[in-house]
Length: 525
Image (tube, rainbow, N blue to C red; front, side, top):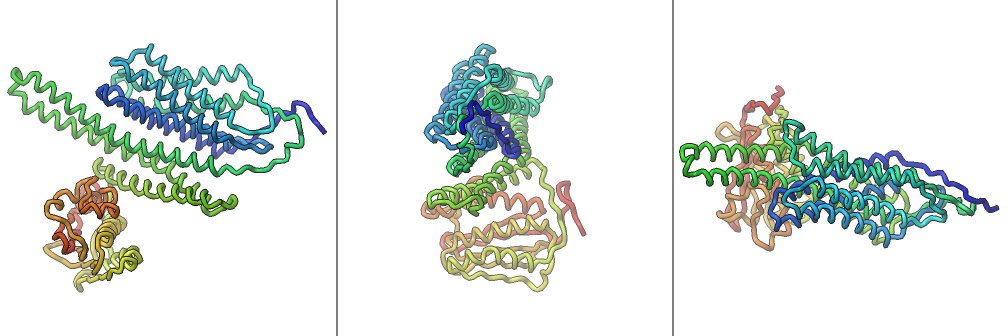
């Protein structure tokens, strides 16, 4: 039997709604943090920051929309035209790029410029939404409520203008602190994105003329889920680049400004030169501390979305919701692998940032040495066997206990052992433990490629990698040894190096027999 104008009732998945709102706020925070650098750099460099902010905001708008669409369940089969899906992403990125480009063209950003830019950014949100709605392939006719459409558009424009005004207008920190201003910009832009979407969705009704199509057959949304995961991973990557490059740029600009003023008044203020240079140094250190504190505070914001990506991809690989073809499984495994690599990088960066910000706290306890050494060797044993290496342990009879933070001691030893295995092609890797001069020495000795004398000085520097070109494929991010030495020094010890090119290396962790108490340690007897 045929029915005229049957209005379909949709159901919502509240978990995906919450996730879409979180993505909108976090992505907006990252995008505007990148965009803030536009007014700080030279005009020749602004295009890069415009591109980064436009990509981040455009992808954020796109990801938020399609996560929200996945939460919107109609009692009919819903499929997607992926050509239009791709076009909708291009629309979001292009509109954002035009808005930020308008701002980048002005040496001094006024309210008129911000208003014009906000129209394009809001246009990106609105046009992306309705372009993406055209990608829905359903056997029903959408009917729109003009009042709610108008309201959603007004909210998008107002939220965009407010966020851009807070980002680019000079505001004294006495009036509003930097942290509060950044939070407000993220909430305003994020609200412009998700409020516009949900009001617009409330203003659309799907009318069904043929009741037979109500037989619901679930559609395969694997491709869309993969695309959303990749896009979210891009947002996180751009966010890391913004967090480090932006903070470094701010520190450099602050230092350069102080030095420039010093040079202008050098002849008149010779007696004050030393004080000004000291002020420049303190300002640079303050900027660096601000960077470290910011990254340390981003712990939850960076890890949570990435954990969701890893979780979703793992669930897909378990084929809980149905089988995958070979190409889909290949792509999802790639997402899962990249997610874990990204998570390890984020963990190292956040650990370094916490130490630099003075927020790392050790839990010093008395530990049995042999079980910890055996556990660490067990973790890397399979890797050593695969490379045909002997894995040896030698503990002096008078060494039975040590004082350390257990998790951090394991982290240091595993880093040293895994590096030794990675750069040893034949022979052995030995963990040798003994007492010397009031310290317990954990020496990791290998018969590997060794390290040239000129490279040894930069081995413990962040993001520094040493070795021959053919060894590059085995190298990581250059953070492990820098983090390990910082953790060792936090214990009151250090890590030393003895190596000769082609004859192996000896990296030794020195831990004091008695713990050195400071404000970042808790000693448990």
